[in-house]
Length: 380
Ligand code: GLA
Image (cartoon, rainbow, N blue to C red; front, top):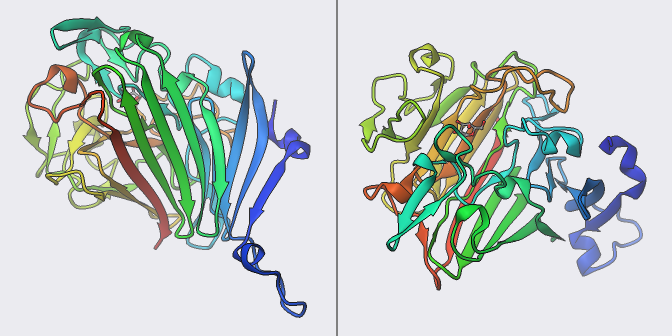
């Protein structure tokens, strides 16, 4: 079912500062609503209704999210001439998200985003077996990760933001992971054309956790052949080299001077040929603690669109869309070819549960996991 046919069902939630505080005087023009949230049916998964939530600010910056996989479906952001375009890859119907070949478009990946080697880990003396859904390894939470479950959703608009809170209770043993894990993801848009993602989780047994968003960005909104002309800067002097199955070897290597060096902005295509298979690596951010700090900037010269990424996480997986192969179709009807989108996934290092020298990813009962990442859209 196409979303465009569903406008009749649209429910508008409009909130204005004026409406909240006092009615406008007769001679005054009513001010533009600050934020709006529209809801529309997006199909069903079993008995569960899937809803698309459209969060907009008064300048038209819009983020669409569904409660299947807590996935971002689109982000409309202005180019240097004020023209709006969708800057992420997405499908126009639920069937796109349900198909087996969906490359994790816009979803929340979990419980453990990225890979765990040989699909197992040992914790407090017990060995936990996970699904080997990526060669010998587990990827993005297993066969039915957080990208393939239905989340509960609750929207909220105020005069300074619009947000969608998504919650999911992952039962003890789901996909082989221990503990009932209660996860919450809040997507918030603000007036500076930023999308903030706040994550929280608690558990009743010790368990690994690594949550991220898996949006594929294309700041040209599909007007260039691929993302190789996008200029990327990463605040990462180091990265984790990987083996042939994309598991970190355990070494920490400098990015400086080589193809992995994005410490000064450079086009993604510049050194890509020197990286076997393309970029799909964990870049370690230059920081000691978990403060919210600049991780990346991404600039697309033809549209003038720019994105700033800030995160509390210690690392970012930069993935240059190497496995996209033209078999899927984007919301705009175009074939999603290799390198048509890129991911900047705020995260802990891959395979941390098996690598004692990596920052801890084990959440214990009584603790609260938190993560905040902001993607802000600008032009220059
Ligand atoms: C991640 C991985 C990639 C690939 C994509 C999904 O970003 O690092 O290797 O598996 O997800 O296609």
